[in-house]
Image 1 (cartoon, rainbow, N blue to C red):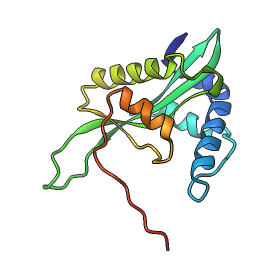
Image 2 (image 1 turned 45 degrees about the vertical axis):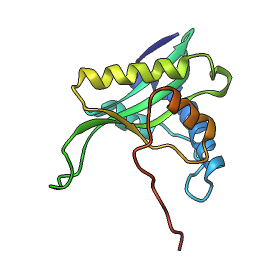
Image 3 (image 1 turned 180 degrees about the vertical axis):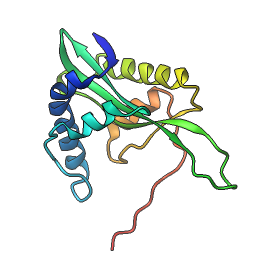
Image 4 (image 1 turned 90 degrees about the horizontal axis):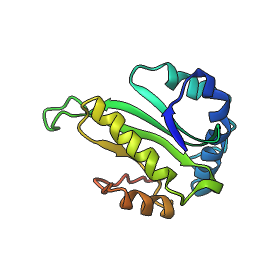
Length: 153
């Protein structure tokens, strides 16, 4: 297995993975997430960015997982300690390849990506009912720092 930064040549391989990711999230929270088919525009924009990357995991030349990682800054309020940090915006290993260490390897490469940029920490948001994913994040050392609460109208 190889993990590397995706290039424009990887857009076609990322599209089915992103489509699977969208469907997974839509299944968990259909009121807020769409099971959309990725056209390539989303990964193209990230790959062209200076402050974000797709990290792609491949097995025998086949894309089997990814992380979309992004550099971000805390809000510029006096009450918030300023930080520059990494956000994992999207992360998935395709179903047949889960529980084989690929997710852990992707997280480790994301941490390295963040260290190389001298960022303060890595952050992600996960759906509360994504129980397996949240157990995985716990095992990777992520801790819950806040809760997002929503009141539907």
